[in-house]
Length: 247
Ligand SMILES: C[S@@+](CC[C@H](N)C(=O)[O-])C[C@H]1O[C@@H](n2cnc3c(N)ncnc32)[C@H](O)[C@@H]1O
Image (cartoon, rainbow, N blue to C red):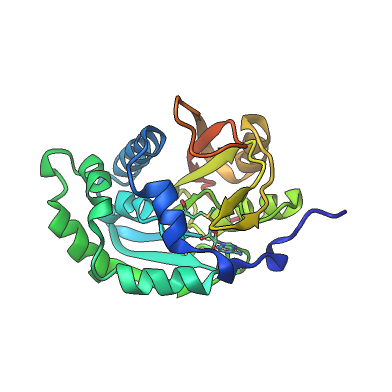
């Protein structure tokens, strides 16, 4: 049987509340490491200059957006699931307490402002759009994130590659990006609904990213003593910049 494709999956049955509870209610060590590295990468690459940020396939995860906020005039949050878009519309205006420890990593000692500041910025700078990674415009954003999306929205390896390529081509030449992936994922369940995944490791990921990047480095984050769920081996964080010329 052919692996399931993105358009065949029940994205409007993706439960943002269940997903948020099981993934982000308490900040995990792996997410903390990913967030710290991502924020540091953007701070270093932008030198603090403000640009337009993209988080694609954001779901109810606000931490990639928080990582970009201090260096962004706008942060566009795009998702394909209408349920996730509805969740974002009702939560972006008043970012919940759950995100406070995540913001504390982005703003240690209040260096980038207090949590109240982050809340105001999210409400002012956040833009919510329903859309697909496969239909993103080219060269439209200055920096971007895509966390646990390309490998977790399809069972089809070619679609995984296309999703990665489309994400990178939505960024301007030489733009910094951060992209996170589940390593060797066997798929996942959210509130009783099964979603497939493409099983990838460091080598496949690098092979997919490198042709479109001026620079890219993959950080492997081990599974640790308390895995998020069964059926994966760790997390992979790719930090890089897109090629200096348009894709
Ligand atoms: C595993 S979740 C990851 C959510 C979030 N980025 C995170 O870090 O936890 C995959 C997300 O991709 C979204 N998605 C599915 N198909 C998509 C598509 N074609 N374009 C953009 N987002 C899509 C889903 O609705 C869901 O929010």
